[in-house]
Length: 430
Image 1 (cartoon, rainbow, N blue to C red):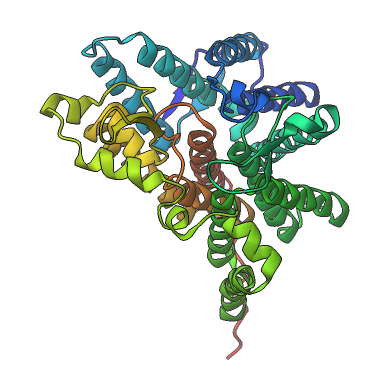
Image 2: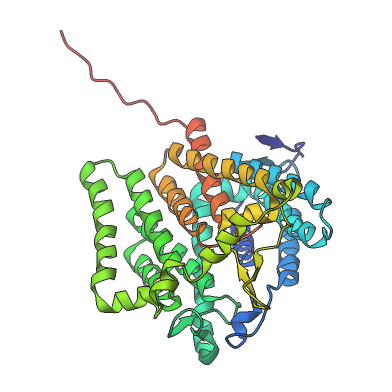
């Protein structure tokens, strides 16, 4: 879907070098704004905290106003199919939110989602139309987030290391300068690591910066002790290599190397200790207690209306009653079950179609670097969505999905507009 505003004489659609830095900065702020800032990251273990939605809303609104002011009249925009489906999901969830007893919270979250989707429309011409530009901006944004975690260790080292008491033993690295819990630190490191490896293999990064980015990403994943991020980026890299390698030998190597790394985690004692995190067999089999809340969501008897429209956006936790007066609040920590619990079955269908369409866009991308980057991001979302929530609103996971779909869709459009010159045919002499 392509939209064109009325042209204005004297204007141009091409961003200059100065404005490109502005759009790059706006994207970095957008990535910052979708991070789940949590006051628990700056609080002692066991204390309560909440996501600072107000500050994120103010930041997102500021980004929107700056982009609106910087967008020239006569701009042209385009929406990827996945982004369009997310707009349909947001409109459906907005309509059903008014049927809830307290629609205020869900409507605020949906307003953030709609503003984020509008930003993707506005950023088509200056950032998304050239897919390599958006991939580079996404890489830089996660590099900046990673540097804030490093500064957190220097600034407040006693707070940056979060003790593990309920789900294991030891410490996990968290962000303090920008409050981020260890799973989010692991995600930042994993995306930085994956995009840097893809860029280096595609000769988009030289040895020195690529090595620095890769080392920093590995350190963040290891220090945060985030198994989900490690598994997700490994699967994303395997898919990226499989989809872009042309020979069977390279494809076999793409599978064998991660398989050997997985074997190393089971054999080498230090890696095995990192993987277990001091947990017992029961905690490992229940995925740190996640399966308890998953089973509750699946077994809960709800009305037809609740099954269709959900309990309201933002309800990512369930209240478990165990015996006499034993009450526990647990996070769902599964994007698809959380999507069903928050916004109902129809929303699961819409977002599921958007996810499938995004994979189709990745498979049809003609440029190997763009296809590998899209496969990495979607591969990460495919694994992380099973163990983390986020696809129901404007989150880092949703942004990864939309970025992968947008860059691959833009790559295919560019290839159609500028097809490669035909190869000269050899003359045959009779």
